[in-house]
Image 1 (spheres, rainbow, N blue to C red):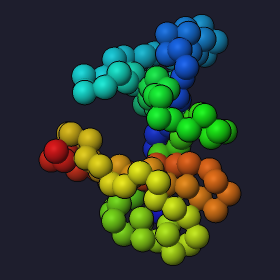
Image 2: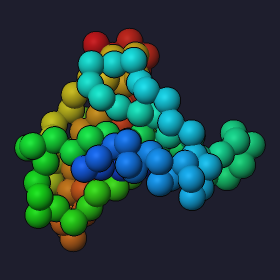
Image 3: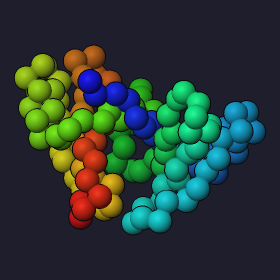
Length: 127
């Protein structure tokens, strides 16, 4: 059964958001070594229940009317297969399958209530 494995916070001011989450919850932030500004968020130890996530700056093209500033990402065996299931179930694929080098393939979707979420297929060979 596919599960939520990652969350992403979209911040107007990433440094301010990181300071808040670090001071309030003790979360750790590490800059991702990729093609965009992105920080990996460690929310606890691996032996604890819960998930880790990421933090990214809000981009100009981000929809200002979108109420969701946190996107949950669900692990799936096939982005293509689940994109079809999402569409057939009444949802939408709003950002089609894209490669995240060394991680896998990601698509951003919207459910029937207008809530955004990601689906990710692990593949270390993704380019």
